[in-house]
Image (cartoon, rainbow, N blue to C red; front, side, top):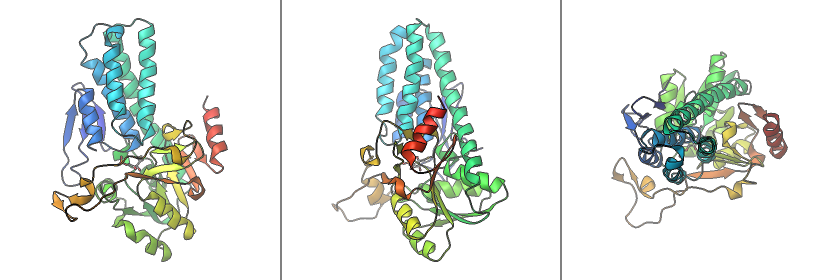
Length: 349
Ligand code: MRU
């Protein structure tokens, strides 16, 4: 399995995704500050992977702490939570993971735990989240495989694969699940300007699995849909509002509208931790605006004239009406999403 991130005795080991596909190198983080930098610089990215990374960052905070008790460590733990929460605003998994670690820490604090107990418990919680993420991806793969064509081409956007999770992937997990069932799937991977997650990462990890893959420039999907060359679309999500509106990598909305125009199903695969019942609609989802240099330059080479205006919103929102189904580890949700999401949340209680 692709080692996106891994808890080790020395610290958290991250595959450096900024170097892929040309170099497979790793970075070791031993402090929450290093994990925060690793998230902001996109060494690790993808909503579920960001969430588990933050949880591991908090476990590292405890590991490297010099305080003697949960009470003494509390201010430093709170500072680490704030630091990690400020890394990327859109993926709700980040806040979900930090909340979960905060709840565990509150129990340790209430029971007057020693630092040894805090270290052990926070490490165990972060590692449990890692294992749960892989299990959720495999469950999504099994549910989503039914929705994939027995034979045909599936378009995906960005990277919602093993590299965006702790392993197996969400959208790419669905594709892997279909291939494991003997379905003959060819993948079209949108290159995903400006950070090229599709061209660099999706292509790299699917090729490693021997799944036939073709990279498209982002502006090619429409014409290929019109020619009947795409049978389904499956993408991941960074945050799903209570009404089923989906925030995902910039360009996803365009793909969804094109899919509707051409009568092609548009599926979203995401773990339950990506669903944000506290956000009523997509309009309330914060959209990260990233540095202009990601658009103006590529590989250190300038592409645009000095001084030109640049926009770089990293995500867009696809209204729920374009989403054929949402594939989760609890099953496949259908519209109206307000009620199917509420029912899924209730069933898990
Ligand atoms: O900016 P990124 O690379 O973190 O954006 C990633 C995406 O948009 C993914 O599609 C999303 O996080 C789902 S990952 C399973």
